[in-house]
Image (tube, rainbow, N blue to C red; front, side, top):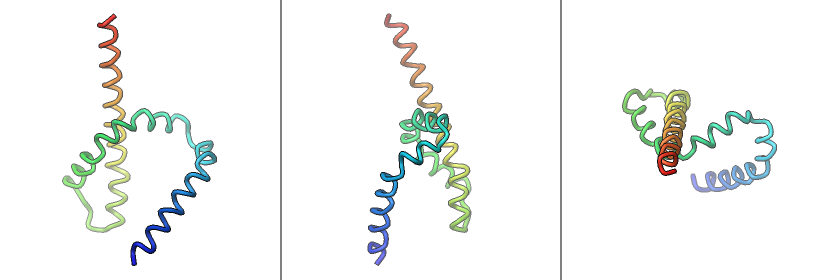
Amino acid sequence: TGVLIIVPLTLVSALSMMVFSDRLADRLHRLSISVLAFASFGLYLVHRLVFKAAIAVFFPADGWMQVVYLVLVALPLSVLLGYGLQRGYDRLLEAWDARAC
């Protein structure tokens, strides 16, 4: 019975995001979007590790508090680490290019 709710909800959500994405993007803060875009690959690499570590350190018993904790603690930490990882990689490439020339 869960599938009968989840599948239509997923399809409607995906369709809504495609329809409203341009309008939503116009209203979002451009610096925030550029930071997230820059950090996205590093974020992809570290998010599971950060979330697992955050859960190991502290994990509330209440379901809503778990969501709040992960969104307010683990997610920003993941973005910061992803950004730092990408920044370090870019600096390494710049140093490598400078040395090669």
